[in-house]
Length: 427
Image (tube, rainbow, N blue to C red; front, side):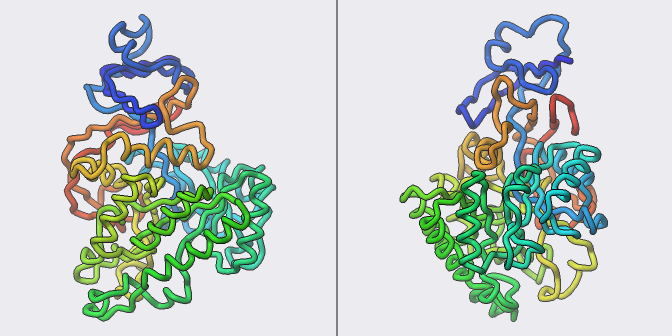
């Protein structure tokens, strides 16, 4: 089957393409693309889809998504997460190992892969556990898990505190060119903290989490990266101090990358307001200068990727006093709008903003997607960059509705999502 997506504004961050054109898709792959198809027209007899002049770009890749499957499907299943992803223009997402049972065995990686193929509308990749049972004491079988299909290794919402274990993991991972992903928060410093430590936490009477809880872990980890040469990714950073540390490590040529969540680009600690538990996140929302620093970090290339940090929580774990509520917010459907908000605010150019959710995560994970190229998977998204809309939590595709952006006005969203050449979402 051949389909041509015509009358589009093609944007490919990997090649800095921004021009009118068309994309020709056949058997799930991009066969041809570019302005010449716009000028000369597509071959006769091929089905065409008129894009109406909207942006046609590689589908988004989200490197940090939590689901409830297996074990807690009432929060989110792979099927419902994929529905949310498709509605948000995300064509590939990476699930975390924090499930029941924990994804620390090759058989479980295979199970999730098969389950996703059977039920999910989009591509699902897997980060396996770095330590058995996520307990931080014994390293998993990185080689076997890599062979089973794991794209990276992490303990999800837990930092690996045993420096010797992390050193061995970074050393061993080099044999497989595996990526080690760290949740950068020292649990002893975070302790019972529930929001950013500062004047606001004091006024609200809530225990705080200092930025040092993040920075100290990153500083230690980068010493181990320097010692071992292993590939390291800081999953979500949130403060100026951490950004400066990573910037220096990159200047020194260390194999280090990092991400930031969309929520930390668009919200700060004051948005918590009257103890809004949907904004209780890990890492916590920081100050306005920290938020602005994250945007600057994206602009100068220190921050490589933007993630949704999609973490669905059932109502009974969120509608509690702030200190007792669970961390996390859903974000698959608001990832792209937050990125486009940075463009509309003239904080980032469009191509650079989209690179953080397309070619950069693809390169870090070694995936063939994330770019418009002949032979690449036909995973693309049609974006109406000017479409106004309001986030309605009840209308979200996710089973859980704990969005940090409820009732927020955005400009721009995905209007059509294509995976393997097939339309999986259409507004």
